[in-house]
Length: 218
Image (cartoon, rainbow, N blue to C red; front, side, top):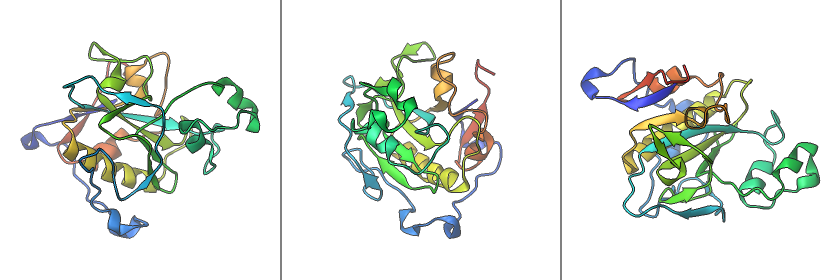
C-alpha cells in the first residue's frame, strides 16, 4: 500500500482535522519546516550520518519505517543512540549485528507521539538503503524518512498517527511530495516495515487530497 497525491476534485474518504485535545502540546499545530530544513518546534539531535543530495533533485517521496531496539521494546535510548553512532553494542545480544552500522532517519515518532529530528530535510539521511521506486534507484537521494517507534506485529498508537499527520502536512507544504510509501515498497524482499499493523486508510484520511493505492506488492 502507498499514498498518492490526488486532484482535490477527486478526493476519496474524509479528511480528519487534528484533535487538539489528544495532542500533548497544542502549540505544535501547525508544524513547519524552516528554510534550513529543520522543524524548530520539535526536539533535535544532529546525526553525523547524512550526505548532500544531488544538485537540483526534487524531494518528492516520503518513506514510512518502523524501528524498535530491542525488537518490540519501547521508550529506551537505543534508537537515538543508533542514529548518533553511540549505541552500546553489548547492551543487548540483538545489537551485535549493528556493530559498525551507520544509519539515520530524518524523523522519529515515539510511542507517545513525541517527535525528534536528526537530519535536515534538505540533506540525504541514510534510511532507505538499497532501494528503488518507479524504476528510480537510490531513494535516499530524493526522499524523506520517518521512523515510527514500533514493529511489524503491534499496532501503532493514536498519538503516533496524530504526530505523523502533523509532520506529513508540514513536509508536504515544504517539499513537492507526490508519493508516500512504506520501506517495504522500495526494498521488497529486504524490508517489511512499516508492516501489516500500519493503517494506511487512517493515515490517508488524515491528509487532504491523498488516497490509498495498492502497490505492486499487493
